[in-house]
Image (cartoon, rainbow, N blue to C red; front, side, top):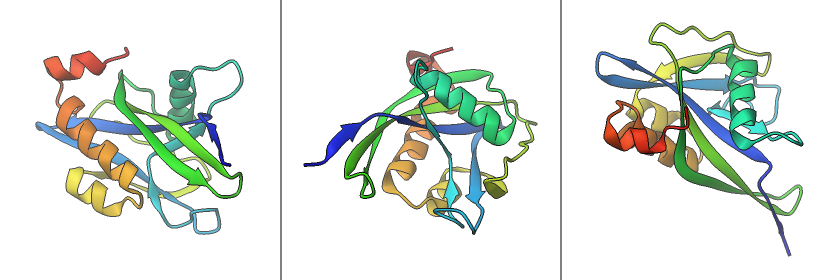
Length: 153
């Protein structure tokens, strides 16, 4: 029987430009697991660390960006990890950065792109990733009273 774990988080970085929301997607290097795939940030939660702390650490380590706003995306991504016979539950976070933010990619990534909703969802491999982008775009991206409900900081 598979076990259940909640030891990773998913984080999506976005910016607002001219009343549009753009998401930062990262391309994994071809020589790594899941190479040549576009992704948000996936980060393991370290012992003694909260899910939010892990997500913030992940975005800083992988992009050099610091968020100006943090949100719970009100979604738990779920995947089956066949190597551990485990169902993984990953809380999803959204982080706003300044419009002119420029990422400095860690060695895991060979490229990055700022994409609006349709392009971002077309590039992402898993349905949970696409759902998260749509939800962040619909509810959180441009702000307002609904977005404030999900704001963490």
